[in-house]
Image (cartoon, rainbow, N blue to C red; front, side, top):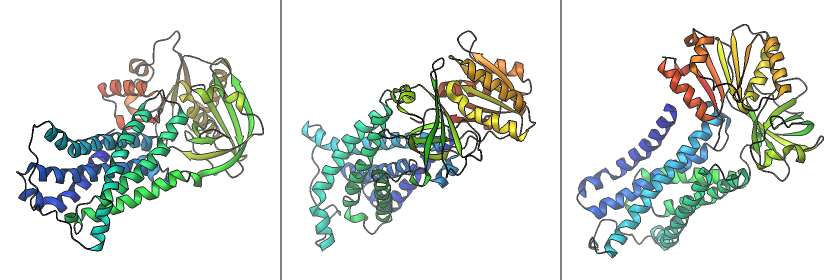
Length: 443
């Protein structure tokens, strides 16, 4: 979380510094003129909003180098969400600065400013004349973008909204971003043209246009597409999971704990954890929990021999064996650990590992498989059946592993469970740098 806040602070600091370098003289000379200060603050909030939108889009591009920087695509998407929220907040301030004087003047609370010479004059050169002719359309595009952004971000943040509608809102956001760029570039004050802020806005705007076109043309993640066909589909009604086995001849391989997007015909791509370790047959296995409309009917819609695309692999949940470890899986979070068990059994690692599988719907066949794999991998396996047992807590971990501070903890499961564990581990002085977790909810 600290890295997320540092990223947000950086996204505020850089454009603010650029704005100050470009505006310091004007701000100092007009610090007591409310309306002129408002004009400068409109530029500041505008450039901040543009920066947050650019970062938000960049974090959704699924670039390999960006995943390495953020230590996993899940972390990138979490930061993407917060950048979007920051963009919305700053945009609201921008809108208020633009609209509030007109409202207050209309109510008679304040007087309209004099229209004398202000220094923000318009030159009669051809470029300035052309830009001025587009000013009305730029103002209109900004207003449309603002109201649309309000609706789309609200929809995106509602977890009850289906995945297909969620993806549609993000496609529409690419169009909104193009409107924002049009608005921002054409409304740069003439006084700012020779200043640093102008090339900054133009460069950021070009980046947004490029990323928006990538999104609209379906280019995101395309370099990671691999054709595959279905080898097996097995539905387990006891814990409502579907085991899906695919064959992808050109699959580049994956690490334990990584995941991939599956592109089915007539269905938006969905991310699922890979539950097998790398093999020479290029077969890939997924254990998919019934958590929504699509996953509920997956075993009925997908059949042996069906063709699809696998996009990936993504993620940095590496389950390093460099020190003794505790693995904690919540529900379907067991998927990544199953692959790690297979890998550990093949490589004969000797560092002690305790695996806890916490679930409300234990499935007999899966438990037997996990027990057998744990024995082969020399892992201490414990089932925490939450129908009859209390939730796993730090006291239980300390009883099982008294020297817990010497261990690393790897967790995959619901975010609320992770937060609770981190909070209690911090109280006992556990180094939270050794607590590794996958962002279970990408939204």
